[in-house]
Amino acid sequence: MLIDTLTPQRALAIVAHPDDIEYYCGGTISRWVQSGATVSFVVATSGDKGSHDLNEDIDRLIRVREQEQRDSGRTLGVDDITFLRYPDSELSFVDHKALRGEFVRHIRRTRPEVILTHDPFVRFKRQHADHRVVGRLALDAAYPISTVAQCYREQIVSEGLSPWQPGDALLFGTDQPTYISDIAATIEVKIKALLAHQSQQSAFAGGMADRLHWRARTIAAPHGLVAAEEFLHVQLGVTLPESS
Ligand SMILES: [Zn+2]
Image 1 (cartoon, rainbow, N blue to C red):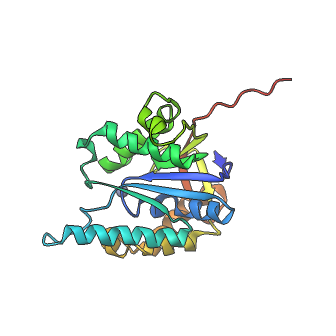
Image 2: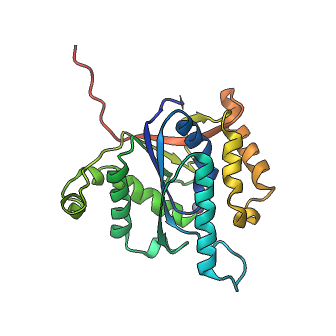
């Protein structure tokens, strides 16, 4: 098990919905930002199915959820947040080449050392289909597509971007964690950030704060820690052996 081996200066989180970041990796992001990192978010949908009210004004819901995500980002120290505004719960059916191209564009723009996204290969846990789609396309974007100049070449030719290879991916929501992040110092910031998503309170059985405390404690305990987040680590860059 790897514990806190990554301390990036630039990181990019690519997620399906507003509130995914806070739940899965908000403590890690807050710690990195406090260490001087610049972190950016790309949110594929604006959570337009996140209401049980069939009379809900969907445009209003989108505005509310984007504002909640911005408020949460401010708490975490992140202000570079892009909403792609794809339809919530329908990512299996949208143009995947275009969606992957958006992920490539933001990887090339923000040049992250680490990307954080959903584990798309979960077998032994329930998973939202949007999480599976975003994880797979984000991982494909991070390796090798963002590095290949001929892929989405208009981004290179017309938009002034350059190919970029992130060094590592941390995949959350995984059923095979290999990387633990100690968030004892930032668990309260993580909770405050999730609490910004007030429209989603009913989605967190037991209450947002208690649920996050319980989850962080449960992940941390086997490793002798008090609060942690877990990931599957994938090395994307190549480390050449040192020549002697
Ligand atoms: Zn989600």
